[in-house]
Length: 174
Ligand SMILES: [Zn+2]
Ligand SMILES: [Zn+2]
Image 1 (cartoon, rainbow, N blue to C red):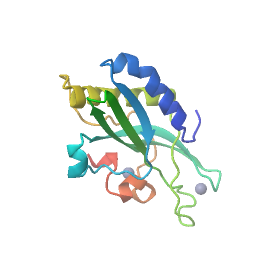
Image 2: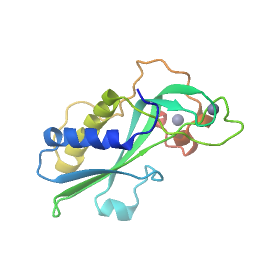
Image 3: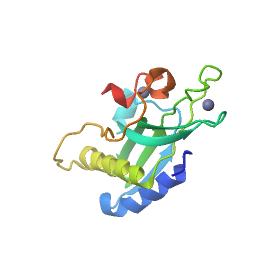
Image 4: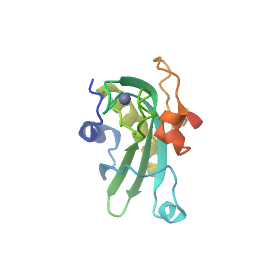
């Protein structure tokens, strides 16, 4: 699959899954903010914002050299809230980037990953599960831990190459 960040793929899958996953009659939308962290201020909390984090398997391409790589530890942060009176729900996503290990010494750039349809689907299903629990109070079975894709072997995670590690909010920290 494509090793380039593709927000419209996420938006399309989000739209597709909505009807079956969040059928409470509210209008949910997905947006992006490439600066958000996993912190929720008191003010935001009062307004109903919640935050969730996931680990996903993604592919990267360096914009400078020809290096490409895979990582099972791409941190994704989702901020979401439901405004019941407006019947509107909002999800804001941020994918965290990684640096190229070949030219990390010469540049300090984080690239964003591309994800397969399958990973996007699974990640969003997990997100919808959390939304059903935290915004609609549905009972959930099982645990609430972030799903890490540990099955696939990738090179050991390097803190200095991971944008989320640099900010101390990597999905590995949980
Ligand atoms: Zn490179
Ligand atoms: Zn990390």
